[in-house]
Image (tube, rainbow, N blue to C red; front, side, top):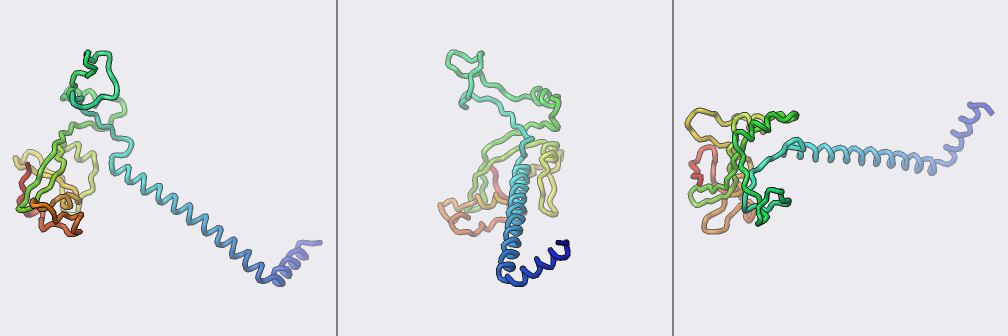
Length: 198
């Protein structure tokens, strides 16, 4: 039997069994489409997770902190005293310079983090204030809103860079009317209004 005969017989069988042919083709199309959609969805979610991790510093950022007597240490050094506590170790300019000399360190900068309270009229907010040198801000590659800029140095004026969610931390001092209860943002313009920082 030649190839032409086989093709003619196959076409004839497909024509005779139209419903079965249609259902088979439909099943193949649905199966193929489902696989393509699932792979695309998986790859999209993976990229989204990687981008989110990268925005937070990714797996290439290491935070080194001073030890403190009040902070529980999960290990004990042989130099620990009889009480089992290590002597406090503080980060100095010398420590920063040592870290800069590490082979794979691309950038090293000190950061000072303190709790802060923001006051504006009847509104109050708590947050975290971080002091970072200009090279640290540049290395973080923070996406800025159009028309914004990184704080200038050597001006004698304190300039702050704030995140777009800081406004949601404000609530009325008398208790209530916060963003998470009402869904409404407070009437504060952080670019124009005077806000007291404590």
